[in-house]
Image (cartoon, rainbow, N blue to C red; front, side):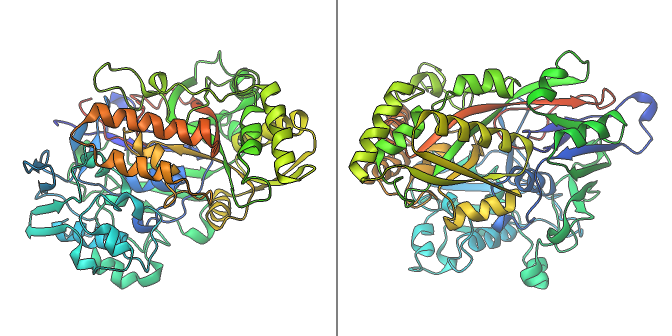
Length: 535
């Protein structure tokens, strides 16, 4: 690549790519001020939470071996070129750039990857994204189970610039996995020096991406700054010096700051999106994010499939996106987002191939509700629904509450709103009945969504052996992509049509206002962050 620009994810969006704002400003410091509706939780990639701000930040502060360009094609980041892959598809040999450096000036080496990956599968750390190694890297499953040593993980440094990875089975999307933060490197000496404070403040970390984090700590992190990393291997083509973020979950507050010139980019929800559609600063774009209701199957009544199907069919998705959100978001009863993956033979979008029967149907919902109550002996349900305190999550939660209470007699829904970090903790600990949440593509393969139904990964406290078996089967079908495609479709059908394990409602479009002085912005759709190619 001749030029790399800034791949900068903001707030709930996928990516911002920014170039210089005009020839007359070429020598001036370039500063962007941005709203975030989410908070960074940690910059330790081992414990990277699944909220947007954390993952987006980590994908700008750190580089992996590969990333995506603006057309969602895989391109080298810290790697020199594409991997050399053995004939059996299990051994990957990857060269690392000689000028890849940490922000303290030290070189990024294969051992930084070996150390970070071993840390990810250390069972004593319980890393939330360890499942991305389970069944993928040789011996990861046994290590996570405490049956083998960390040193047995299938990754090693051949020399100062060469990394060798051995897979448990051929995996068609493995190189895509190398774009996500779970597979990023870590500097062992810096982690050791910081101890349990590593990643808790901007100073307790070292960075190898286009930016460094400054002015942030996890305890009081309502503002933070992306500062250009002069040690980044392509720093001369990073065209923004500073990006200042403010955590502002309320659109009205952000709107006032945008109008006063204190913010350059803000999100719009509900009436704000409608009111500003005709303004020149208004933009909207799709995001590969499915917003859904997570169901705790251990809660009273929610272990009953008819009750879950009643909830699933009681929500008018189309009315929500048309009349409430009004920002271009699209209704969905499927979990895999549109424009993520296509049939390897016909090039049909997964969402069009994977047709599901369960959807909004008030008569069917009420029949399933009555059947479920009869089967459980219940008169009704009192459900606690947790949601983040950003405006869109609250709008979503209130709509779900009204739909369920109006359409299913005997149900009561209480909404508990909280910062995203607390909501994430509640879902992880099972302290909820229903949860307003989302899943956004880490990489462009349906398995990134569908493995969430695996009993070893889900937070929903359920186990369906046929789903687990199909997830395992899909991992063994790398050499038969069409058969694998059919397996993936069946996983989603079982999870949603048969078991209603959770309730997809809509795929996001993001409406924003953007200062016209912020130019050359592009938002590729398949991941949180993409480094731009030629500009």
